[in-house]
View 1: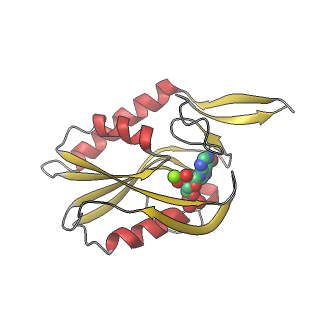
View 2: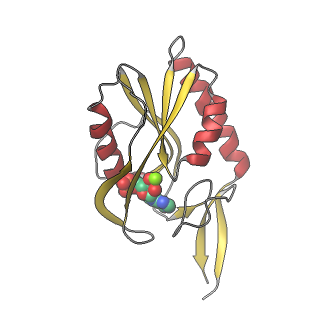
Length: 174
Ligand code: IMP
Ligand code: MG
């Protein structure tokens, strides 16, 4: 079987949307200092662009979780691989995620980060597969709502690959 990469969201559209999200976030947090918490590895490219689109004083932190057993199906359980290294107590925290699928990862992260008592805790995700989300929660900033398709690129991987693609796309088997 041959594999073809198809584009779902072009790099140009992503860049435009990220700039708009950055402006919206900067307005909402005006006069405050932010902590962006990027969820590795998937968010690293989105985080880099988003951080530069938010014109506010901020610090950037990262943590790593893993949830997917094989390539494309959720194992249901989320594991913390490494945690934040600086305190977020009393800080305004914005979680930066690549994609919300079932919502299990975010539910875990919200519970985990709340234990550190931030002043506020919000979520910014580039993509949301709305139809698949089982966990009820409010997503404060969403880049794009997408159909139930396994996507790659702009940080998102399939078995570790394709993170470096500038577009968000999917693999078509022909
Ligand atoms: P959730 O816990 O089911 O919401 O899954 C969230 C995590 O699974 C994301 O942070 C991604 O790392 C990964 N994931 C979910 N859907 C996709 C996809 O379509 N492509 C690549 N990774 C995905
Ligand atoms: Mg992820």
